[in-house]
Length: 453
Image (tube, rainbow, N blue to C red; front, side):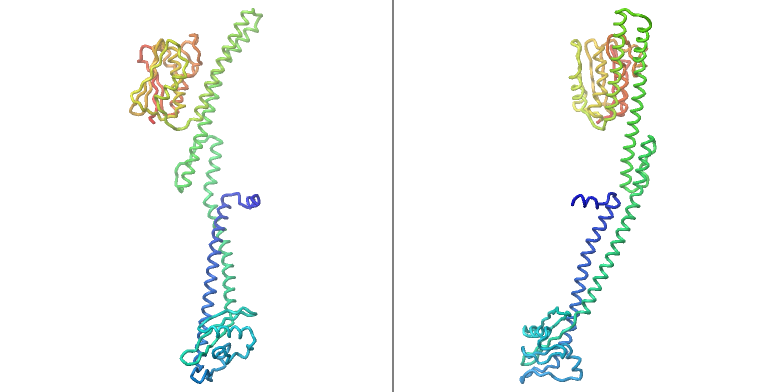
């Protein structure tokens, strides 16, 4: 049954809204039709009762209820007044219509009304519906009752005609409601269909066109804003993908060239066991460098794609990050802040990704101490990471944030020269910046600026 109903349910929003409108209109029209026809039938019955009481009252004027008994007076229009009229003295029948024998159902029904006394009405449903009303004759000493009858067939025919007309009108109204609803919903959804097609086209070609606010209804303006945000996100993902591809191809070119050169040198002529081991070590070192480059770039791409707006408490995040550092025994990390509850307008995970390369570099080159100071500045939050190591040579300061560049590649420290560029890129993506402070001595100093939370 559920499967059958689901198959009958329209699949389009236009069809479903039209069905809802049709169902609602049908429900209301059924109620109105029932109420209207009930009122019409009741009104027609009241009209019939009024006519019967008028006729009974007219006949009652011809009945004498004096002390000598009940007598029916003869009048000039006797035949007209006596049509479908019964006159009773108490329960005794004095007069009846010629067309209604004493044993007929109508005459028996008239006798029952006369026996009840007082003004009453009843309906006799036989081969033809008949309405009967009794009217007591007042003003005399004897009891007399006049009962008048009326054929209800014309009245019921009128009621049935009204019902048929109502049903026909309901069907026409429902058809118009369904057609107009489909037309109105189709016209209302046309901009949505157009916006959907445009969004699909723009997302496929990474277009910079957007819907903007424009002159649209509130609902469509909100839909346009949502689609703009989605298109911006798709474009950002594509941009990150292209950037990752470029960086991978650029950064992997050097270790790959080194591996190829080592293999070409090793195959150029027979080598000794020591030469072979040297070649293997060089290839292994280049492969490890490639792995580091891939891990770093992929981590950056993954974190950038999942970054969402948020806030992070700066000092707890820095302390948690310090706990996971592999600190040499001679190096200590000091964390302090100008305010106890300082918040940055970035998620905690993004804050860790920005600060982590700076801390790792500081710990790697520090002689004894790394200092992290967090404070507020007019346009956000500032975090200074400094160490007391040898510092950055002035000739290399301009290349600090170039991917793959290192001060001294043969200094025995690991790294692929990608940490600082990634830190700056992540900070900029959040509306911040990472800068090198050449005034700090001794050692190196970096300043991270982020929006306030």
